[in-house]
Length: 117
Image (cartoon, rainbow, N blue to C red; front, side, top):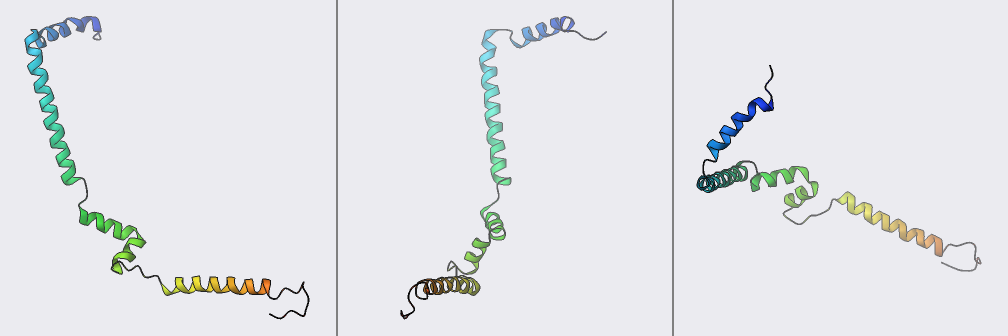
């Protein structure tokens, strides 16, 4: 036959009477329990901080390998010089923009042909 709550009830009542014999034993047991929990939480947090959090040199290595901007900053000692290809592309863009403005404004053939550029 399976155990039922009714059949297990007297066992729990005996345990309750054993644990809470008198009211004076509740307070020290509660204090002991909270002290044990506090010590365990402190010990656990110390273990996590010392062994689970990466050290600053590991954080630096992770950032160095995952961020191209940070890698360039470290490799150039903080000067962050840009590549020549990027500078040339930007200059070519502005040069093309200026020449397109010239062709739009100065060489507009919708006006008279007597205007000189």
